[in-house]
Length: 174
Image (tube, rainbow, N blue to C red; front, side, top):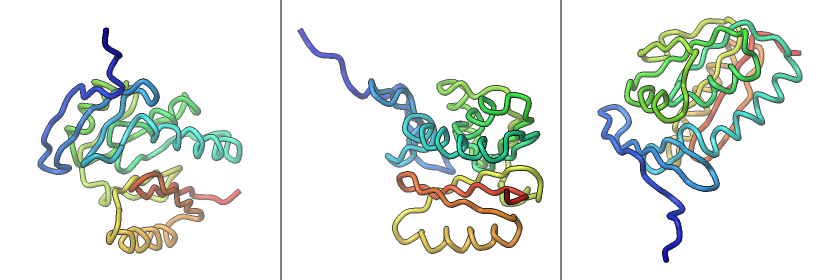
């Protein structure tokens, strides 16, 4: 009699943009997307968004629109839809495979999806969430990107889950 497997790979694809993308399910963390063995959407990343966007909800109870740049599998966008069901959420990502997997495995729905390089769409409007993969020697580039955001937005919060740097930007400081 064997024990159930703790981790199971549901699907694995090679993306010309992100490299190897794996969909993994575990008993403790549920289903999530990994790029080069780093969780990008779902699983533990959803917990970070739950915590961070919950803090924003307490400070800014009404959000009418949200632009998520670096949509990935949709963890941030779906958390926004949960907290602000009336909000119009647009998610931008350059990799259509990440979005396809988010729809198939993580329940990514109700979000307007744009396949494009997100850096071309920045507007000073509502709430913008940037999810970038920066690790090791790439951290200084993340800080430079954050400094650029600080010139555009009134408030920029930096979040560091795993190897990502997430920037949550809002137009007004409350």
